[in-house]
Length: 238
Image (cartoon, rainbow, N blue to C red; front, side, top):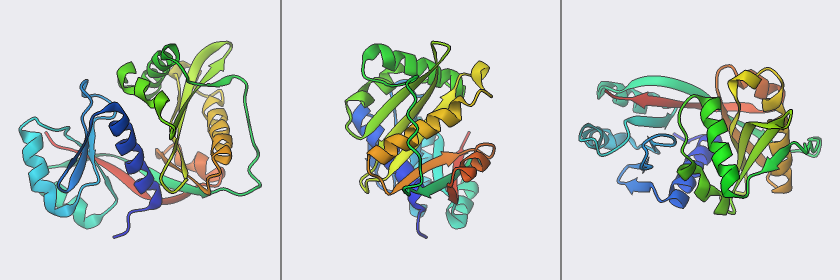
């Protein structure tokens, strides 16, 4: 079964940030991100069907993260459930073909992250936006990567929103971690960040843009021209 391009992109993004940060590990049949603080982006991904039992043993022995991300796949998911894994979430994997009609929207209040102070701010805002702790030590190595660009957005002269653009091996751009602090939601800051990242993708000369979106976010991105390619599902085991 072919994995949708948007999900392949997501897997490549995770692999890259793990390699840059020094916590990516390739096992026989799956990949692992194991940052020392065991928070974001701690997970298992790119899992092959015949390696679920071996993965379960490693998780049970407390050697690996118990959070597993898989592409929508009935056979693979049935095997996961039979081994005691339960689904915790599902996000839409979406892709948009870039055309010349896309307007370049550059906002002066959105700034590229280039230094240690900014990475600290990014980690704080992302933690507040997504509801789980993201350490500066995870974010800091990314600013040295030519494939990753991080951005912070201001509102009334305060940093309140964030976003990432990642360029994969195909030259496609992915939009990641678009969010705003909870008290600033409903002000259009997420849409503004998305439009800004669109412009970055244009400058990257990408043919396609990828992202994953929640059930609430997917209709918003559909209006922006993104099409659903399938679902990326999360499983865990006690």
